[in-house]
Image (cartoon, rainbow, N blue to C red):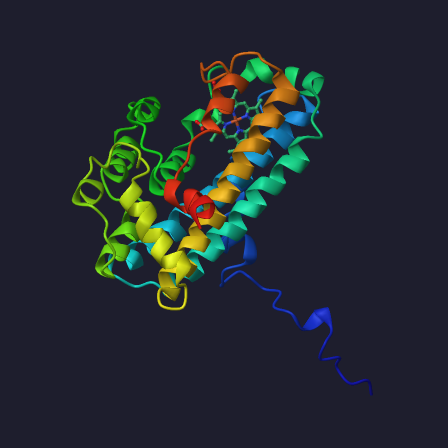
Length: 278
Ligand code: HEM
């Protein structure tokens, strides 16, 4: 008599008439239904897949950033490091996606470009939320969401709430370091400009990491996040340039020129400047 093989595939659950299967749990039918090319062009599948994957990572980043920011707001400095590390890893996945998309040539792209009209990543609510949570405060960027009042309201609320860097500066102040009231009380819908007193506060931290270890570690983690954000933007810019050259974007901007200017956005100014001053 042969004994049943405990490691055989035949031992797996096979009947899903009464319990959730993998596809049910993940709503794979819905996921696949969202993949709807509008042309017969082979590369449109790649274009849609990379955008979908990127949106999923961006949503995850929003969730992780929001939790980390709630924790920072409550004065907790260790737990947010876990969430921010996950953000950094997810950003790496986002940046890697350009490597797949770059296999699409300008001729491939032109086979379906006219099909999506004025649609552009410029109208990505998840990206814009990440941008805002990290501190890029540019109200005009919310206008493409006016036709979606709930989305617009969420972005607008974030635009008027502290960024992850604002919360970090509040923590510095709570540690007794000098962060001027005009910095802590600034109009949050405007970008954080570099301030000499904040640079001085970071210098204190970076000159004595042992005393200020938790905020020092947090600052380095934030730098990882901005570093990776820059890498994504740079790869987007070069991918756009190699695909459409200097043509205008589907979203109505000048295209590569607009993206090149966006490379100049600095989210955590004093964290970059402190390196020079040390
Ligand atoms: C070959 C593929 C792509 C091209 C040619 C392209 C082109 C562009 C252009 C020209 C812009 C400037 C706005 C405008 O449309 O006028 C833009 C913005 C943007 N794109 Fe793409 N894009 C591509 C792929 C992607 C992918 C895969 C994503 C992933 C989500 C993405 C996300 C974005 C975002 C978030 C913005 C706004 C950036 C900002 O305002 O800082 N793009 N894209």
